[in-house]
Structures are given as C-alpha cells and as structure tokens.
Image (cartoon, rainbow, N blue to C red; front, side, top):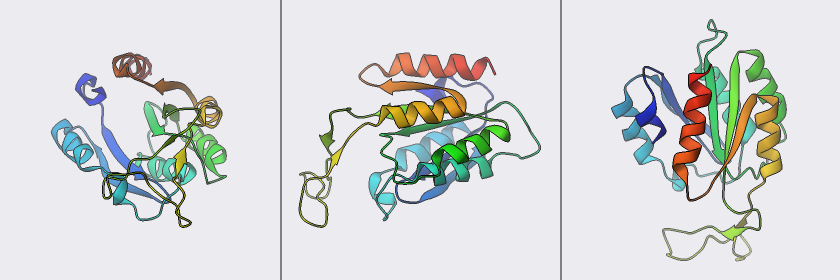
Length: 171
C-alpha cells in the first residue's frame, strides 16, 4: 500500500531476523519492489532473532552517502531486539541524514508465531511454543533517536500508510 502511494521516491528492501540482508537495492521500479516484497517470508533467514541494529546498519549502508537528506528508513518489527546496537546505529544513521521510522507489529501481551511448515506454532529448542511480544518502548526509542515516528500496525493499515506518506512527503 505504501509503494502505491509513493511518487518518484526510491525504495529498497532489507529483510532481517537474526541477521540482516539487502534484499533489493534502492530503485524507482515499483513493480520490481512489489515483486521482491511478495517473495519475503520468515523462512528466508535461517538465524532467528531480531537484529534491528544490523538491519539499520545494512539499510544505512545501502543509501547514497553523498546525499545528506531526504532519506527515510521504515522498520517493521515486533521490536523484540536481541541486538543491543539498535540505538547507537540509529543515531549513526541519523547523522548520515536518515530519518528512522518504526512500525510495531503484534500484541504487547504476546501471541504465538504461526509455523507454515507444521500448521501449528513455532517451537523453541525445548519444544515450548514461541511467544512474540510487541516491544513498543524499544520501537519508540528507535524512532525518537532517528527523529522519525512510531506507529502500531493493527487492523487499519491505511492510517499507518497515510501517516508515513505524509511524513515522507514533508521531508
């Protein structure tokens, strides 16, 4: 939905869990961006976790270093950060001209993660059901350090998309 509302903005895609990977470099080819986005799935990254700091670094590295403004990063995550570098890397990215926005996915009370392979829920090594909890404070802290905004993505994606578009267009 966000890509559909962009106009002549370059978009890129970094996927992350326990590691972060540049899935698609910056482009104005929105058809390609949508194609890449449609192929993203949780099983793309073998290492589980939430390496937000590494995702921020990978994203910052993908931007043109000569441009010092008009750069926006949107992190979509539950915020369960197993990587202590997120805030320092957010500040470094902001120093490079990147505004960091965060979108929270999930429930603050926690919920099990579906496992497409088994049809049940993901289990840890001990066989316990993995519960993912939205860490809004972490995501708000990152957005604050990156002079961006935080939004919780619930059932109304249009509101979140419109808020992001307004933020990006105002840059």
